[in-house]
Length: 385
Image (cartoon, rainbow, N blue to C red; front, side, top):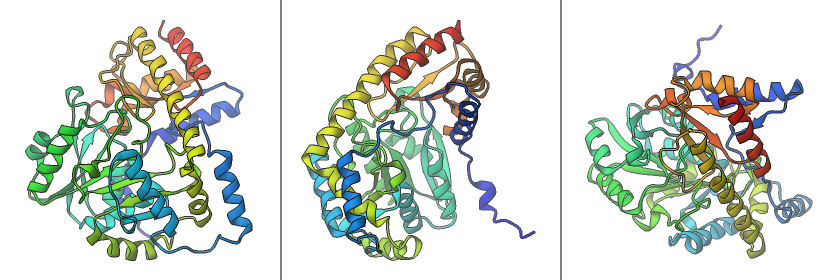
């Protein structure tokens, strides 16, 4: 048999997907499983967006688009960033991609050479490491404490920057913790990376899902970083596979050249439909949904503490709770397995997000209805005794 490439051995598995398979199998057997595992909103695209997609299909707008995306959508994204997050963005810097995954693939291919080391916080979203590996780079997870909000900071970056280090990949708000990087901390972090002539890739996928202070994009601090975002989370279009990059002007031509070969274009019907996401009427729908996520978070946090599932840092964005289970177990894999099979509640063990806190931490997603979350808490209370 042909020998597989070494990168297939280096790619990190995603245990949340395996958990999803187990939960689905139990559901198929007739068990009622409440999923607090997969980070997928229980909302779907508003009807207005779906109707626009149908009209685009009937109008024959399903052919290839330019590699960087259709111009009206690039302009709409630029305006969205200006109106919502305070960043002035020229539409020519916006590259529409096949989801945030497509955005990170292009950014990695454009910035990372074989052997380049990229710093990431531990904990962080596991799949991001694989894009670095796929480009020949070396992801280096740096343990980050609750005192750091589980985020990289300037001091940590400076301490771990080595001869092979090329840049950092960070997220605010973060998956799995739901924590943001404080504005001053982010400013000093970016300055530290620039001091080393490095790059910053900033994952802002959850930027629209905020629950405390209204956020600003990292672009308001530095215009030369690379932004990744998506229509999957805030806009609830997970399977539509649509995202975007915002890149410095000098990167645009290189990114377009890569996109033309690696993807040709993002899904064309999804692009046309996404224009409707920014209609004022539809944005009001998204705002109501954001507040419903906040309601779920505000219900769960005191319930977790009551159950002695300590939350070291309260999430101020996304839809995740990163909880400490040491009151009950030092083995999150075993705890997750028992919670699924004995209580019918699926949640992701810590090893998905890095080794530093893996044994005693778990991620719980509240991307499901409040009534199901209440039932999950009741089941967990019985399970924990």
